[in-house]
Each structure stands twice: as structure tokens, then as C-alpha cells.
Length: 127
Image 1 (cartoon, rainbow, N blue to C red):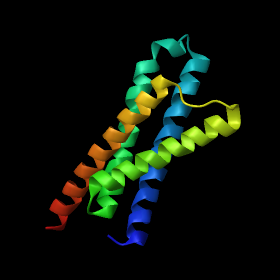
Image 2: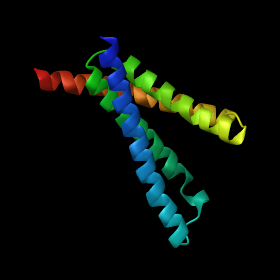
Image 3: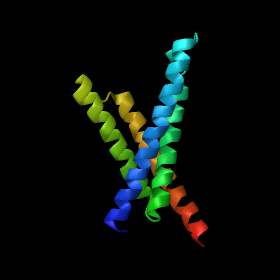
Image 4: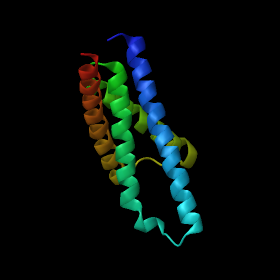
């Protein structure tokens, strides 16, 4: 795969993930502000939606890359985790906890799976 095509695929995947994350954050911040909903009651829902966002981001990256979906999805997830780590480290002076490392490991696997599905769906449409 050409480097330019590969980079474009990863960029589309990252943009998809961050758009979904921003939309989810907006919806849930408004729900938390204007209802009696507590953050502790929706933690697992937010983790699930994050995993879904990474799956879809990997899917988009794999679909645009059209080959090696596991690699394109994995790189997309690794860059996502790196960006989150840099925000956390540079903004708050903290590193990932063991729990967060496990979440990001699961996100990596989820995005890789999404990349595989994205390649397979895009290649079946091309035929």
C-alpha cells in the first residue's frame, strides 16, 4: 500500500473517531447537566460507546486503505491512544493508569477488528 494512501486512511479513521467522541461528549455532558443522571451510572455506557467509535474509526480506515485492515486499524488506534496520552500527560501531568492501559489495549483490538471488516466490506463492494 502506498504511504500516502495509508496515511489518508488513518487520518480519516482518526477524524471519524474524534467526531464521534465529540458528539458523544456533547450529548452526555448535556444529559449530566440538565438531568439527575450521575456520571457513575453511565461509565460502562461511555466505555462501550468509545469502543464503538474506535471500531467505526478502524472500519473507516480499513475501508479507505483497502488492504491490511488489521494494520491500518491498529495504527489508527495507536495514534488515538497517543493523542489521548499526550493530552493527559501534557495537560494534567499524569500518565495512564493500569485500568486505562487495559481500556486502550481493548480499543486497539477493537479498531483492528474494525479495520479487517472495513477492508472486507470495501473489497466486496469493489467486485
